[in-house]
Every structure is written in structure tokens, then in C-alpha cells.
Amino acid sequence: MTLLSWLRTDLRAELAVQARRPVHGLLVGVAVTLTLVFGYVVPYAGYAAGTTGPPGSDRGLAAMLPAAFLGSATAGTPVFAGALALVLGALVVGSEEGWQTWKTLLLQGTGRVRVYAAKVAVAALGAGALTAASLLAAAAASATVAAAEDAAATWPAAADVVTGLASAWLITGTWAVVGVVLAVLLRSVALPVGLGLVWVLAVQNLLTALAAPLLTEVAEAQRWLPGPNAGSLVHWLGAPASTPGVQDLVGPGHAVAVLGCYLVTLALLGGWVFWRRDVR
Amino acid sequence: MRAARSDTVADRPAVELVGLTKRYGSRTAVDQLDLQVRSGEVLGLLGPNGAGKTTTMQLLLGLARPTSGQVRVLGRRPGPGYLDQVGALLEGPGFYPALSGRANLRALATRAGVPRARVEEVLARVDLTGRAQDRYGRYSLGMKQRLGVAAALLKDPALVVLDEPTNGLDPQGMADMRATVRALAGAGCTVLLSSHLLGEVQQVCDRVAVMAHGRLRTVTTVAELRAQAGVRLRVRASPQAHADRVVADVAGPGPVAAEHAPRVTAALVRAGLEVHEVARVEPSLEEAFLALTGEGTGFPRNENEQEEVGDDAAVVAAH
Image (cartoon, rainbow over all chains, first blue to last red; front, side, top):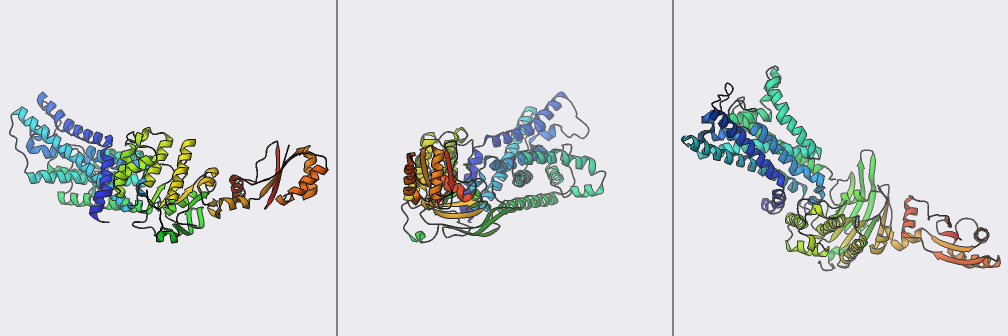
């Protein structure tokens, strides 16, 4: 299998199919909307009304200006953008079960590894698109706020923007791969999405808020779970610590290493299961 | 359309299954299957539900892994390039519902490295060009099945595997499908198809492989399969009860060989019976199939017919 051949056949075909699915656009739209609503619209409405917010909310005008847009854009990544990326990953793979299209794809004879690799790549690219769209929307919103408030539009350095985009993409990409693997293991869409969302939106926060302060074992385990590492990474990018899922637990190097390990290990696990298993 | 093949592939089997076994837990779906599909022939895979036909096809297409045994398709073992010259429609078509028929085939063509022009060729081949822009989700069952066949033909395959290809088709669609299979065979393509419609198999297949309970019962021609089930002697006379006794007196109880026809006829006339018919009746493929697989006991019975079935002869007496 050459990379070029894979790009020209499997990946191209997979992109052509997934690009025509309206649901992916919907997911990107929801991610952008949530970023704007909770990163800019609600804080700006509060600011305009003179509300100070809860102690430590750190949602003043400064958080909405271009200099801080990376933090505002990525603040929701550990929770809602991650959850949306997980749904995207589950859809990319799990839908093939419902439509009974696995056999149609595999009968083209390019091989299971190539088919699966294209799926993972498209899920990761989708997560990247979701992340990039959120960053672009946040940048536009922060510029709008700066113009409205006649504040200085000081943008982060280009290298910082690239780092922020890559970090956020690593987080959403990891959750997208979690969705892929759950869909491979459970051979459906609904169950992977349900279980994934319960973990991302509920269990993860319960562990952080409830279990970790009570049990040192859980507190230590937090350092190796994807959620807390994602929260630490976006905190390092400037996301307000008051945002759900954002915390200052580990350094950025540790967070990147842990998330990268999850991404690679889970992708390989899903591929191994898919390669070994009979196709229905 | 692929030109007729007369190259070296004609000398070797298109499909070779050796000791193929597939177990799911304690259930054996395919049991020590040895089968060769000759290059260029149309082989029908027959068997009742649960016989292992679809599992066999899944195994030879690499969609399922055998518990033991070997598979070789067009001289290749499973691995890279294994399905390069193989097209298949298995357990009904599966396509993306939101995409048109054409877009679905184009995506498959891209994946398989097939030129786009081939998509239009196969759409025309299954008479779907006029509806190619419609979403697959809006296709009728027959159109979906035809699109599945189009996908199977996309790579201009040397071997086509079709699992119940006429499912959901109306009579005209079934006739078209038979014509397609015959055209493939005429072009030198090897076809392996499974079907429950024995008449369909009878019309298009060179040989049939009969499976039951995961095992291969026989591989033979349709004519030989029917011959194996024996030949009926149908007697219609009045009064029928008297005729039955006469026939039993002449040929003895049980099966009646077809060569007894002259003696049976003479005895019926001597007895003063009104003889309407004494005829040799070949068993249908369905009857032969049921006898072979043990799924039935022999010929159909109704209030107007009686019959006995043996290894090589039978009698049917009717009013």
C-alpha cells in the first residue's frame, strides 16, 4: 500500500462520501454556535449589563478581546467540542453498520487496513474542521467586540495561533477516535454516542468534582485520563479556569503526551478489532 | 464489456475451497467444504435457509475468516489484490441512502481505482441510467438490487459472486437478471450464484452445488440432479382405486420403474379400466433438491394425487 495510492483512492472516496452528509455540517455549526454563545454572546451581554458574574469567573471584557481569543475559542474543547467530535467519529464509522455498507466497501478489494485508515483520517479531519471553524468564529467575534468597545485589536503571535489550533485539534481528534473505536466495538451509532456522551459530559466531571477531592487514587488517575489532560492543555492556552472541564492539573507537555497516546493507541485498537473481525 | 477469456486462467478453477470450515461458537455454519468452481462456468449454490451458502460466500470473499481450511480465488489466496478481479453482491445491496445511485457508484469506483466512465457503463447495463441521479434511499427494492449488481460489475470482474440476485425483482427484472448472468457467462466470466428459486438456477446454471447443514451434498449438473431423484410413472385411470391395485399387482408395491409402463398399460386395459394416461414424468429440480437435502420427503401430494418415491422410480396415480 503506497500512501499516494491510499490518498487517491480510499481517502478521496471517503471524503467524497462524508462531505455530502449534512450531519457533519450540523455538528460544525453546533460547535461554532456554542463557542460564540458561551464564549462571547453571554459574557458580552453580562458585561454590557454590568454583571460581574460569580467570583473567579474571569469573563470580563479582556477575555473577549483578540489577545485572548485562543483561550475563549478553546475553552469548550474538553467538554462540548470533544463531545461533538466523539459523535462525529461514531457517525463516520457506525453508520456503515446501519446502512450495511461495510461489505460494499470491502468488496472493492482495497483491504481492511486502508478502509479503516481512511475512516480514522476523515474523522480526524472532521474534528480539525470543527476546531478550525470554532477558532475562526471566535476570532471574528473577538474582532467584533474590540471594534464595538474601541479596544486595541492585539492578536496572538501566528505561532501561538498554530499551537492553539494544533492543541485543540489534538483534543477533538482524540475524542473523534474514541467515537470511532466505540462504533467499531459496538457496531452501531446510538450506543457509542450515548455511552461516549455520558462519559464526556457526566462521568468525567463527576470524577473531577466529586471523586478526586475525596480519593487520592482518583486524583492520581485524573492525571492519566483524557478529559483532565484536555482541560489542562486548554488552560495553558488561556482558557478561563471557571469553564467546565478546564483545570490546571498537568503541564502542556504531559497533556500532549497523554492525549497523543490515547489517540494512537485507540486508533490501533480499533483497527486491530476491525481487521480481525468478520464483517456482517 | 470484458472480452471472452481464453487465457491461462481458463485452465485453473476460478474458486477453490479446501476443507473450509466456519464455526460460530458451538454451531458449525460450514463444515469441511471442498468445492471448485470452474473458470467460465455458472455454478448455482443451492440449499435451504441456514445451509451455509451465504457464509461460504463470505468466506471466499474474505468478509469472514475461516476456522480452518483454505480459500483460493482466481489463483490468489486472501491478501492484497485478492479481490481485484472479483465483483459481488452479498445479502442484498448496501449503499449510502443520501447519495444518488451514480454518486454511490462513483465513490466505489474511486475507491477501487476504476475510471468514472465505467460507472455509466454499468448503470446502462442494469438499466438505471435514467434514475441514476435519484437518491438511493428513494429507490425501489428492485432498483436497489440492480444498483448492487452494477456495483458488482464495476471492476469488470473475472468472477462474479451473487447472493440471491433476484430478491425483490419483479418478473421482468428477474428475466433481465438471468439475461445479465448469461451475458456474463457468454463473455467468459465465472459466476457463482445462490438462489432459492430453483427454476432460476435451472435456467442459468451449468452446474449446481447443493448444501445442507453446512455440508456439500453434491456438485452436479441440473439434469443429473434431477435424474438422481428418480423418474415418476403417472397413471390416470377410472376407477382409480382399482387401477392402484392393478399397478401394484404388476409392478409390486413401492417404486415402479419407468420401463414397466407397457406392462402396466396392458394390465390396466385387460382389467377393463378406462385408461386416461400412462406417462413418464421427470422430477422437477425442486423435487430433486428436496429429496437430496432431506428437507422434504418427495413429491407433492394433494387430494387428486398419490405417489411413491424410490431411488430410481416412482409411481403417481391420479383420477
